[in-house]
Image (cartoon, rainbow, N blue to C red; front, side, top):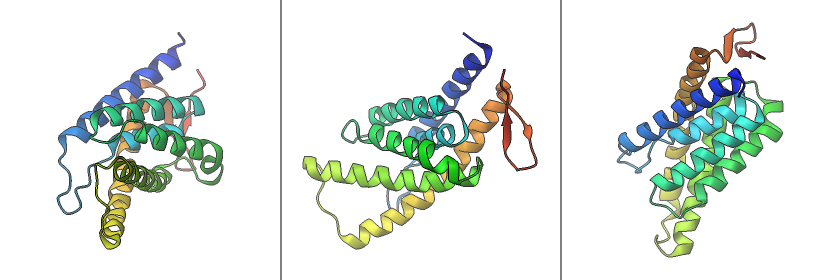
Length: 182
């Protein structure tokens, strides 16, 4: 196994484990019962700022882990994270720079997509009653804010893990990190 691949896998493993621990231990915000989507933040970072294979890998691992940790129908987060990752790889990486603000924007969209799919799956399975439209819009706004902020924090953490492992160099003039090609 090449050294860079091993370091990337180790950095991704640490980021995913820390995100899962944070997501489970930090209580939900009581107003709208919104949990921090830390695993989404890690998947977004790897999809926006690293090579496509790492983005897809992180999306699958984080999606499966979130489905296992949550009380939602299985497969919803996996589908949402993979769609978000493919959107990043195929479209957004060409339009947005590789930085924390881009990860925050994508995190907002990914958080909303995940919430919409989770709500639809719960209503369709009969585990959830249809909620009033105003409550859904207020919850969507809360989810967007929390998802964006969490994705930014997790992107900074994952980038720091890449710097510690030697996968990322110093910041260049464009306020982004240069990747070593070792």
